[in-house]
Image (cartoon, rainbow, N blue to C red; front, side, top):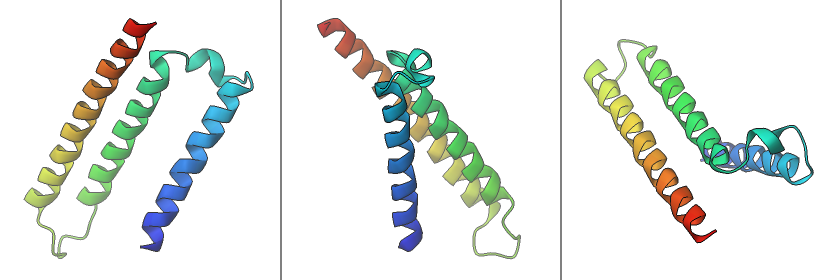
Length: 99
């Protein structure tokens, strides 16, 4: 449970630092404007998913998880990334339609 809370706190800290940099006209303001802001988080999620798949594949072979299970877990994460990416693109398109 403590690792879960540490992960959430680290994610919140990262998002607050990125938003603070954008708000105060930092380097990220030009790079992460408009839809690029959402694509940045989608790419970050994809990198995290690939890291998760790699770590699972490096797990000891005598563990409880069989290779087919980590393969399905990795595929599930990739599908999740694609769904989040599509939702984000739709949200950006909807937001831009109102502007």
